[in-house]
Amino acid sequence: MDYYYKCSDCGNTYAITPERMLCEDCSSKQETGRPLRGILEVEMQGKLADCSSIYSVLPIEKKWFPEIPVGNTPLWAPKRLQQKHGFSNLLIKDDTRNLTGSFKDRASWLVSAAALKWGIRHVTVASTGNAASSMAGIGAAAGLKVTIYVPGSIPKAKLVQSLQYGAEVVSVNGSYDDAFRMAMKPDSSEKVLNRNTGYNPLTIEGKKTASFELCHQMSNTPDYIFVPTGDAVVLSGMIKGFKDLQKLGKIGRFPKFIAVQARGSNALARAMEQGDFSEPMKSETIADSIQVEVPACGYYALRELKAHGGGCITVSDDEIRQAQIELSSQAGLFTEPSAAASLAGLLRMKAEIDPEANIVLLASGTGLKDIENAKEAVEKAGRTIIRKEVSDD
Ligand SMILES: *Cc1c(COP(=O)(O)O)cnc(C)c1O
Image (cartoon, rainbow, N blue to C red; front, side, top):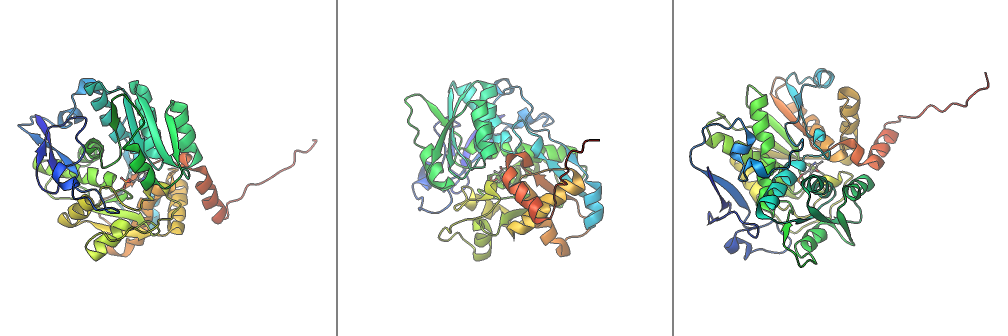
């Protein structure tokens, strides 16, 4: 197979090189405060005999990938949750089980392989937390130096996790969107590969692996896939995966993707409603991993959602807290608030969805990554600790 980049806006093609991030023409028309113009998609050319190995559909050869457990996460049926909410074919794609505890490992894994292939030893990334801790951990396993740019508000566990892995941590006195810009201009004389989500096309490509797994794990194409959405790169990557699968003749119809956003960070939902992105609004939610003012992959996701009959739904922080507790106490799956947004989105749409539909909830990050908000959720739910004095007898 031959691989190259193709601009998702104008169709220009480019070779896959470390410097190439966006389409030259389209990115020159970038407006401030809007999603990235000129997002590049990886295109495959040639005849694919067999896509049973994920490596055969990725643009970097297998030998460059660090040998670590990334992807191949379980897809399982949460029986009590199914019964309680009346969805008999509800499944969870459990990406909390990745090496660093989040879906982001899929992108970090491909970017690490590319860095090793290109002989680049240093990777930078801006992140609200998970992309940082993911790149730090996967980079550590691959022997790369990693510099992360994070907003001051990052949950403590994600910060400590990154320091454990040995990353250089730059805490930016500003928002994630500010950190995103700073990571593009690292103070470094050596060659650096940028892993900013959406900006580096390999981040989208790496995330498509989840869709190939779903295709192998299920006998039917899912009717609905609920994806917690901030920058919309997880969503775009999974859609890209199904586009590839369709081209390869592996699926008959396209699943309906539902992007779930927090009410206080709903740029994509607003764009779906209004037809285009407007001035960014200040974002606020407990679901830090989906808190974004300008979604990097916004234009791409908006177009693809529309093209494939997808939708967007917003949920409140309280609904997210309740969904988090629901997943923990009905399924034994402790997720971070952003990951619980998938279930919150499904419950909000309950009336419109056929109880027999094949539904996949993406669980994108583990609950241990954000103990503060988990604690608040149990307190709000009235879960108390029984305190006892030790008696003498
Ligand atoms: C990054 C992330 C998301 C959302 O991904 P985007 O590409 O920003 O939309 C959802 N959940 C978790 C746990 C994440 O880390």
